[in-house]
Amino acid sequence: MSLVSRPQFWMLLVGVTASSIALLALGRTSATPCAATPLQTEGPFYPPPSQLMAQVDKDNDLTRLAGRAAHAKGQVIYIVGQVRDEACRPIEGAVVEIWQAGASGRYSHPRDRNPAPLDPDFQFWGKTATDSNGRYQFKTVIPGQYPAGPRWTRPSHIHFKVQRSGFRELTTQMYFEGDPYQDQDPIFLRVPAAERGRVIVRPETPPPGFEPDSRLCRFDLTLKGQ
Image (cartoon, rainbow, N blue to C red; front, side):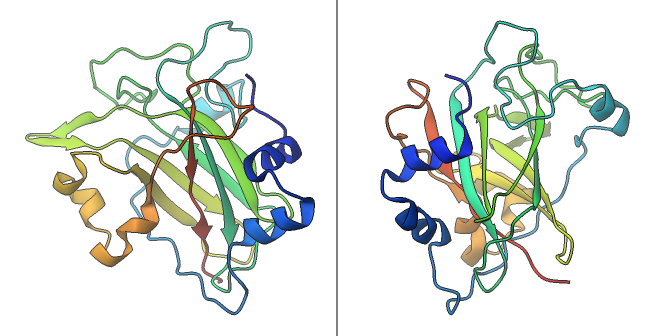
């Protein structure tokens, strides 16, 4: 199926009344502090300006490209979450970007020398903006692991960049539970052990109405004020 609209998406996801959706989306009361999301390196493969300008699709569905009938290769996932401040208040209008390797482990970037095949039907980079409750969503695939150096394989991960006026820009990476390469990855290990759970997601079965065999990943993001 195509990416569902935001109202339809959240009704499917929660399956309750509109008032309950707002409460569940917030997840905590404003009296409970939200810890800032750990920072991670941007890495070398953020798309260069010329590539972003030339890219036709700049939306939040990375699994299909305009004018192409084929579907991106790999395990389809929906990433959902909320962008909030350190008081757990939702941040409306935050711009959320993601970029990643395709299922083969290769990025669409001139500096990536990985010989793995490049998926011509995958978008590799996308963006969206949060709604009035700070919520966002993406449809993409789980990226492949790839060699990053001698005896070093990067675990599957997706890069995030979040920007909103009045807040510090957040750049981080999202990892997947159970990846065997996490404990050997120096980038992941820079996150303090007590904070690593904030950048790891557990793919779960989505509610009915989503693409068959897809998975759902919940990833909230907390910004620091200026």
